[in-house]
Length: 174
Image (cartoon, rainbow, N blue to C red; front, side):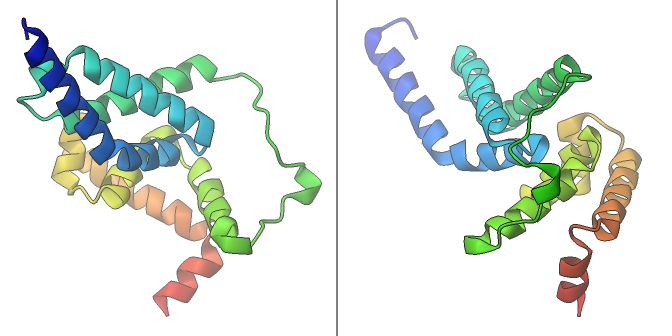
């Protein structure tokens, strides 16, 4: 990338990459964090790190690198923020979901996901949001296959048992 033209081409390729994958990366980050602003920050961090290595990554698998960077940045965020007070926009006495325009369903899902551990959310996000296989999820998270299977089983059990999702899951199974 020594010449101006090749740098412009690389930048154009990166813009195309962002345009193509930004929405799926934001969905992944939202599932991992259950917080829109934190999710946007994670995507921004992952894309900045990807851009800084774009020359090498462009010929490889930049999406896998970006997803791994995003999940690692989330772990860093979680470790940094652990033990801090969390401000919410909901008052506990008024925590009923708003059912208008599907926001209530999303709220229920995010609440249920927030009850999972960070590892469980990462596995659920990769398995069911990104539709990766168990082996691909294990590779992506650098976990043994058996761990991915047991974490998936445990997370699905928690989601089914969740008071937020129990009615919806049982209705879909009928």
